[in-house]
Image 1 (cartoon, helix red, strand yellow):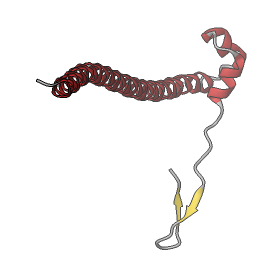
Image 2: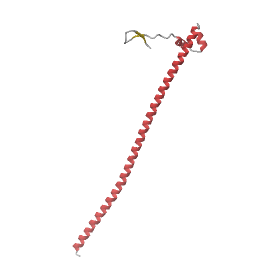
Image 3: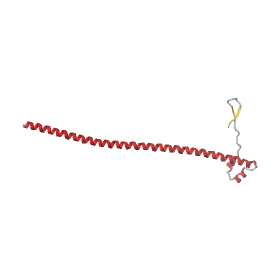
Image 4: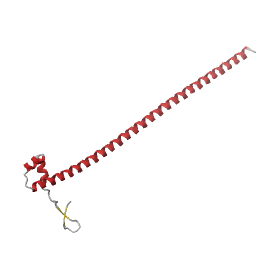
Length: 143
C-alpha cells in the first residue's frame, strides 16, 4: 500500500472514529436530557398536584365558613324568636300584675326586674295603623 493510501485510510478511520464518538456523545447527551426532562415533568406534576390540594383546601374553608355563617344566622334567628316569645310572656304576666293595681315599684321588688324593664314591658302596645286597601279603597288593618 502506498503512503497516500495509508494516509487516506487513516484519515477515513479517524473521521469514522470521530463520528462514532460524536454519535455516542449525542446519545449520552440525549439520555441525560431525557432523564432531566422526566425529572422536570415529575416536579411540574408535583406542583400541579399541590396546587389542586390548595384549591381544595380553599374550597373546604369557604364551605365551612358558609356553613358556620348559616349556623350563626339560624342561632341568632332562634335567639330573637326565643327572646321575643319570652318578653311577650313576661309582658303578659306583668300586665296581670298591673291589673291587680300593683305599682311599678312593687312589681320591681316582687319580680327583681329592673325598673326600666318593667316600664318597657308594661308599656301599652300601639294599635296597628290603618292602611288604605288597594282593592276597594276601604281601610284595612296592617299586621
